Length: 456
Image 1: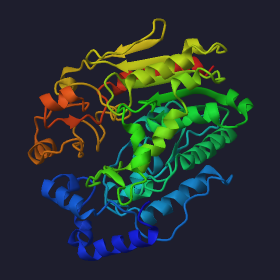
Image 2: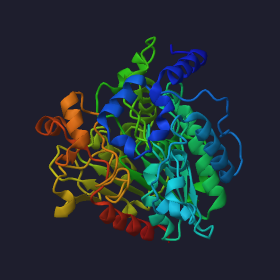
Image 3: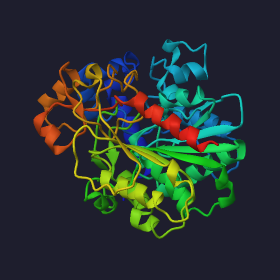
């Protein structure tokens, strides 16, 4: 049971009237909002960015067969109407934005420009890649990878999953079936428009692609066009053994969130609804390695990049999923598979012999000096990322409950960065969760090799 839409609208309106920060939001942009911890705490206490705006606007109908460009236009308008930060200035002029609009001025950019789904057209209809983000994320997660594909002559499309790109409250009533429907639409549009297709997903995005290929009643003949799968930290099984409880806690009246943050990260929700965890648990359960072993799997090469100490997703479950796919008896393309395991330190993983797994460790002293290990949140972002990168404006400190350590995490120049393991958080109490990949370029070299092997 949840607060109905009428009451949520009233609460949202009241907070706008009573909250002085709401009317002062024009003083912030998506960069400087990260600079003052007292402001961050005030925004969190007043839940300024927790709820969607009350505008009556319809989202895109994924049951339609409208072209992808119409989907993008409709979704951009939906974000503008529902996201309380949509019109906030966001002067992050990266390569993706420059390719979308070469005349763009950084000072004219807003949050809606950065979180909307987008398309980079490479001037051909031969090859395209579809990129699907993870739970609570947005297509901004692919702003570093997209230009890489584009400069290889590959058309790029991204998908904004339902319940994302606006505010955390949108995920209270969203079902994984909504995500499945959106994924089906986006994949079908790719197959309609391109001769060769690659499907890429981060975390939940990866799970949705596997689920579609294995469980959806689709035209399997069109799968011949799919040349490869690209996954970063794919959602295979939750690291926490208590994740399954989320679906039951979700039914408790007035208990909607696992935790609430300030939600100042324009590209990702910091607040996490119980329902979001419940829905992704159902999705991951449908692609468990034991279930895949009993399915008829498509003969499509798979590339995975993930951390051996991932604290969101169980790394062992990801290895098991890859093994089930790689060793499926009817596959002729298994020799093209590749698994990149970020392993800065040893983790207790059982890796069957014969799996094409490459271990990669952070070796650049200048970049890696303060990095303990690689986090779930790292793989798709380059060190140069203006928001999540080595000198980015945003610091992920949401795992810290102690006020003093939170302030240190947000302000200190001497923080360690890594995954939020028990060992790390005890040893480094004000550590930032790593939000970029120090091995981004090395990983891209692996991806280009994978594409070369599979595109022939």
